[in-house]
Image (cartoon, helix red, strand yellow):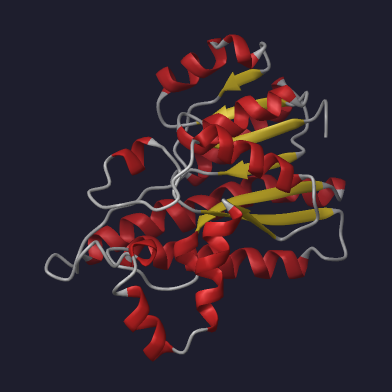
Length: 257
């Protein structure tokens, strides 16, 4: 994969930032997108960036803006070989403050934002019959958990979208993968008012993600043991799952309604 160009959304912090720096170690050039230009400037100036990370500020909810960024990247740097779509938000709420607006906002960023980025780059991938789409999801894609009515719904939608794209690209030079992330130390998780079992650093997660990108696996589990535990819970009968999840911190049992 060395010497190619990756476009990363959500590159200003967290997993997106860590993956950008990790890809540089493998010889990639990175076009980094985030809403805040200061984050991108700081990232590109790091010694570890080796002068191979270039910032393109943008908001994933701006469809036309992302199309402009893709055109700019390909004109100024070169053809994009891979997209790593990690921009996302988590807005927790319980039963007492259930909010359609918060659900809509999370779907807008986490699902439509991903679709906007894919729409921007997919025609070029299809024209070249080459390219990789890697989407960051969450272990909440598998089963409902406490305080994730909006976030979990958005990640379940990403799983369905990526499974469909994987099917549609199976006889092409395109490849689709989904990163099923557990709890990672980021700005978002730093604010969590409840336990986060098995939490790992963004740097460790990036190592696992980049290793997974080199395989043909559809799902990249990060960290594997924690996410696999939740994935197995899909096989539980609903009655058993609701009883178990309400008592288990990994499934949100310590978070309250």
